[in-house]
Length: 185
Image (tube, rainbow, N blue to C red; front, side, top):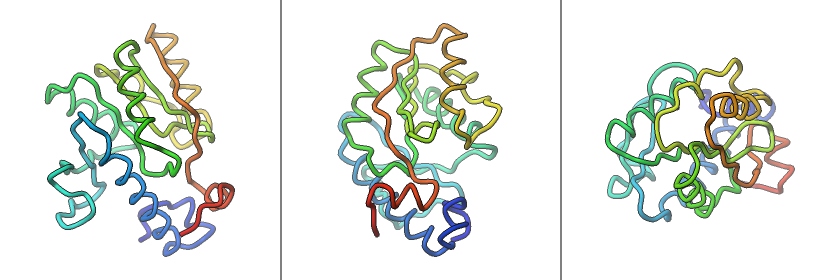
């Protein structure tokens, strides 16, 4: 409590923000555990919890690197590629409309594209997929803004990266995001 969904907590309080965060995590868990043919790694922002919903028979557990969100994502990608993975798809935990088919589509697209984004309706993205390290994608001027996806697309274009966009989906940053789609705890 107090460390998750902080923008949401400004309007609903830390306890309710934590409840929404837990519901979103449960959804991410149910989606990712059904995706076939891939390794699954969960990144913890603080201590790795051994007894939680992320069963170690399906999920590896790692601690996030320090830094801003771009630095943490870049580190996760670099680690995966250093371990020999050829395609890596990273998702956030705040997209209640995410389905296994979105993740599977991202892996399929990486057979033909360098970068895959799942656009969020707020101008960010709920998913990014790469088939090799692309450090330049993680050095954006403003994370958590409505320009993240546009800036990312511009970087891809300027650097000749073949890009595929998936279906745009809503994510949850504010209570209006949660309520606008009829989600409830």
